[in-house]
Length: 305
Image (cartoon, rainbow, N blue to C red; front, top):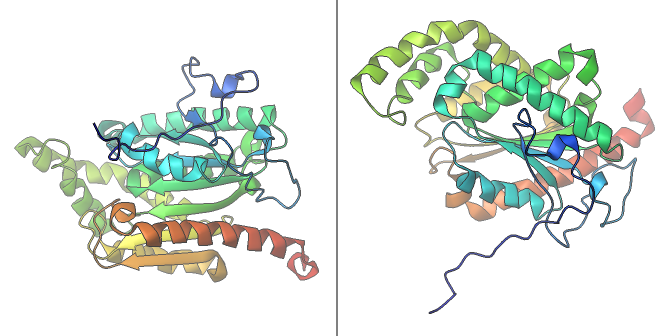
């Protein structure tokens, strides 16, 4: 029997140190799943302040991968592997539909996640670099909550400057009109019953106060780090016009040289890696190069003026 169709098994670095509280899966409030970098992967060394050897696991940058509503571990793992193969340690989470719609519970989880990240960083003082890879509004809602809590809580403010960039895949919903339409669109993946189509749009008004903060923190002027935005005009769940409205606001608040945009004309929601693999990987490489360029810029005398 041929093995040609078998997918290669990604080999992650075994734990060579004690499993500390932040990555112990037995801790009930450790909602973020930890997966370490691949064996023999180089240390990305995105920080110019701290250079480390390839075998210094504790200095590896972190990629926080936040999946779309209803995503599975199998689907998300292919994105996690994009980072572990590049030498990143990863945290990840996938919120289901009902969990995301019950926004207060998700925000409470986000606070626990932030505590987990904070503990991890305090256990590993040589780690000073974080990137995000977020998908659709499901990942966007968690990202928003994490950014909001970092900026609002003295205990977690030290984390925000460690964020070097975010990759945004198929998000966000940005206009009030699309908020209603988006809830109606969710009915099909949630079972497609008549009750779902009738009741989901009625929950949109409950979301309006949160939606204001969602827009605020996705475009917050303190987020002066690299933004790579990937979207398609063919996306039925989050139309390209929504992402373009977001980009207008983002460019008002963030330095434009920190914003990189990839627009496709034919690609389904959160399927850009599948349909445009070469472009997608190239965008990740440009993303990392842009982070390094920004770190170099920060060391120049004129950047402190």
